[in-house]
Amino acid sequence: MKKQHIVLLSGILLILVFVLGSYFYIKQQSKEISFMARENVSTFIREHSPKLGNDDAKVYIVEFLDPACETCSAFYPYVKNLMAANQGKIKLVIRYAPFHDGSDYFVKILEAAKRQGKYWETLEVMLQSQSYWASHHNPQPELIWQFLPNAGLNVDKIANDMNDPKIAKLIEQDIADAKTLNVTKTPEFFVNGKPLPSFGYDQLKELVEDEIKANY
Picture 1 (cartoon, rainbow, N blue to C red):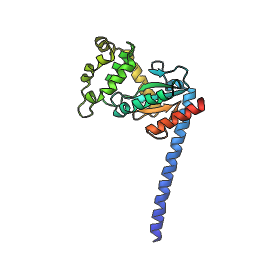
Picture 2: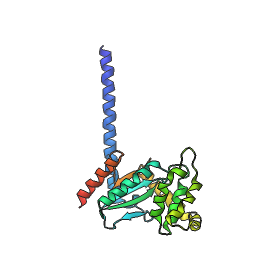
Picture 3: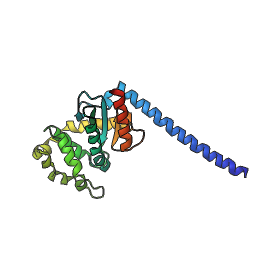
Picture 4: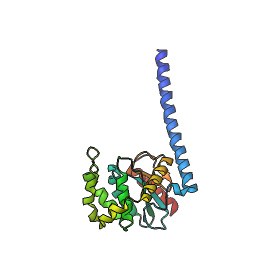
């Protein structure tokens, strides 16, 4: 009987140690990332990073995105709704984390579209048509080309510009920054350098609203 009690108590202690360890790890990671946001802004925002919103906004949402990620596609309207509900107070910054096989292909298209001043239009077309070309069981990246004219693009120029080595280099930079920030999945959000306490739209909304209250 006593032996059973000892085993049970040991199990409870192990669970407690694990829970406390996880809590302090997350708390420490949050502190480190917040410090990094103040001391090394470029890890979060590079000169090449696409930005949407008011330049004077005091709340920055940095999103690590994979164009072939279904959850990224699902979250994008929520992020736009957050921005619309808080006019002028939020700036969205896109970083790339092309974790799916071949996702850098679509990032290159986005960056080529940026040179035509059609970045956000292309991103929306890409995410809306994602189910046609990004099936994880049978991906068909070439199908994206039939949708690109909907963004008002010169498609021939896209096909040429996307092969610029400078684009490959900026993708490498984003992947390196994602690694530094321990980004392992997409979408991954940071709000003024702070990571979400746990993943979810409500958590993102709460963190954004907290930062708005703190800065306005």
